[in-house]
Image (cartoon, rainbow, N blue to C red):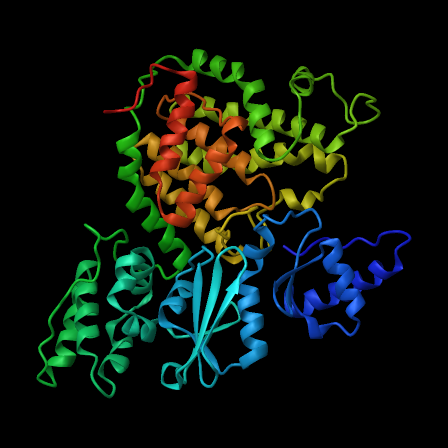
Length: 522
């Protein structure tokens, strides 16, 4: 995320340099070449003060002075902008990402890749070593740069249909989710046939795609490809490139790659969660004792949840806001106003969540409760900050309308124009799910995966998790600050590596801290 530019008093050199940087970051999306600066002294002072970070010789990205050398946030946030800016400046539009990279972009993959491959019309071959073990391979092959290129995220890429025809079997084996999504965006196999039948007929690729359509339960498309080749007396040998036991996306008319990804994640992961969690407890007629237990855990939960989000709070502060004897105006004991406002907001939101849990325990539909009430939780969470004038009231009215990045994560939250469709898909998945543990674990993760707000996503996600845990009688579970790194690694494993078991096991471990009798299934 571009840094907020301040004008330090008494430092005219840095002030002028920051004005130049602001203009350049708006023009080049945060990616800057040394030659963009008319004054080398300005570039030097921006590097020295941490507003610019070098990517490779002569190339820089905007960064924050608060970042340390090991902080990956600026680079992961700028990765695709850098690739786009570098390739655009060097080759114009005389290049194309290879078919596999093209498909990853088309299918809404949110992970920064270790390496991206670019094919050019005319250049030498080179490997650019980039920060944090990422790289870019560039090589010339004019026959692998299609005439009909399309643009995604400012990059020249293959159209989906052509990329599917050219992607090898390893793409389906190594990236099954992306392969399924790409196939789902193909309305009709006739989109593939011009490429499969052109010139030297791509018989092997045709057999692979016909088998892939058969695997994802679209036999009509399989037959269409068969018949097209049969006209030329070619009998296809169908070889299924997927190594999955069964598909994770059912045939549908949905075309949003982000919605398709959520559905695939849910279908592919739900059994993993069920395998980890014990059966849901029976809490019939225990509504009052359950809510009392939730109350007992407020102080510990608030301390840990706010600390995970980066706030520095104390037990004393939390207890004071819970008692209602803290006031934001004129309080001499509070020199950390923002932290105090966050604590007050957390208390108010906690009370709203407890009300939602009461509805769930009274047999209201849990999925509908969280769909309806999460807006109220968010409004309570940030209400005190709005009252104090720290944030605009408009921010409580809806979801974010711009990009956001998760600190030191290789996962990039969904673009803002995908949020509404993705959340609707999440509510539908919650509604259809029969297992409370699946609703809680996957509901929490996918909400944070979407990241619909500018701030507070983790807190709302954990509120959502606990409300859905209550729907199965599982206890309110606190994610402890002392295990923050493990928690973040588990979220990263799900978002980046496609592994949900570490997160499910982590949540169960934290749950068992409070209820030792809640043993994992053998």
